[in-house]
Image (cartoon, rainbow, N blue to C red; front, side, top):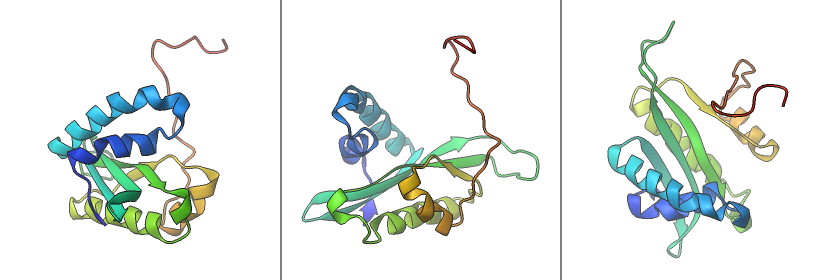
Length: 147
């Protein structure tokens, strides 16, 4: 396992957008990841075998500002957790997510969030993540509600 570097950005983008239908999203995301890695706003880790990345995970750091009951101004979002299908169930994702958690803790970050799939939910719950049903989202400029 090693920290991700800007040169890993295209691979990280492919992890985020693995379906060919989303291939057009990869280049802009890779450009963002490369810049965010360079600025220290994305912390990523990859696992390689024979020079090929077989798993990865990252944190997007968000300057959130202090809030009620938490003076820490930073939050983190766990993103781009991916393991090659032939390497799943071998502990790679757990080790990489743990590296992300350690990196967050080393920076004093106390609040992390993530989106998950049913397949990965057990891993995150085993690491202490809990469901939060209070989050809502809005896409500005989108269709009005009910349409």
